[in-house]
Image 1 (cartoon, rainbow, N blue to C red):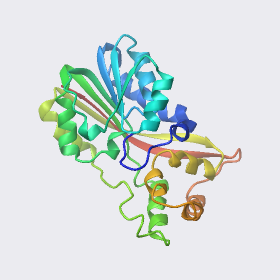
Image 2: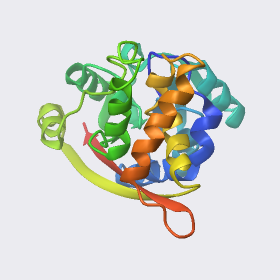
Image 3: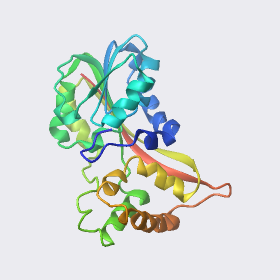
Image 4: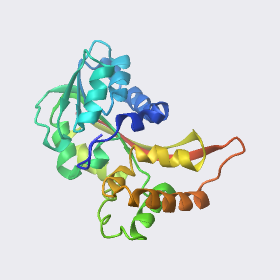
Amino acid sequence: MTTSSADWQARQYTLFEEERTRPVRDLLNAAQAATARTAVDLGCGPGNSTETLLAYAPDASVLGVDNSGDMIAAARKRLPRIEFELADISAWKAEGPYDLILANASLQWVPDHETLFPGLVAKLAEGGRLAVQMPDNLDEPAHRLMREAAADGPWRDKLKGAERTARYRAEWYYSLLKPQCARVDVWRTTYHHPLEGGIDAIIEWFKGTGLRPFLARLDAQETPAFLERYRAGLKSAYTVLGDGTVLLPFPRIFIVATR
């Protein structure tokens, strides 16, 4: 993952590893990852996406990149034979060429997509593929309620600008990438992740992702009050099923751009 706030907690992220890994499997299938001989996993996190990439392309030379020392340490422990680099995606200077550049749930944290995406395509070999998956859930209650909780409390000034707001539609990415690419596929899928543990499970999910920029700015006294306000909103927005499970709708946008 990539963000300028404090290091992400690898253990928190992997609480829902199976649910977080399913989209990257779908992406790698569409990107024909098995044909790659040189690949990079941008925003590799704790290595779950890198491990999935290796399952598709076991003979490929793979590099994992992340700007969190916590995540890189977890990835190196998980895959000790793979090279991992501590670096920010926006400042990543490797020239390639690569057969595959994978970015699974990472580029939504990186600014300037109008230059970032063409720059990544330029690092591809002829016929190489840029494979991107990003959450497209800012309109979902879980994210809307984060913003509302941030704006409605004594921490409002401290939390201004913490939310992730930059977003583009599918046609924007298609129009940006098509001049450089032989083919651009863009699609959107909504997953419904069953989370055991009711409303608290939703909070635990987002503690590993969307809540991190907010929590990083709060002190030990503010955090419980903020989360309780967030929890109250979630209770009115999500239904807890009879077995205690909550289905979390999670839209994601996928892009496979072939140079």
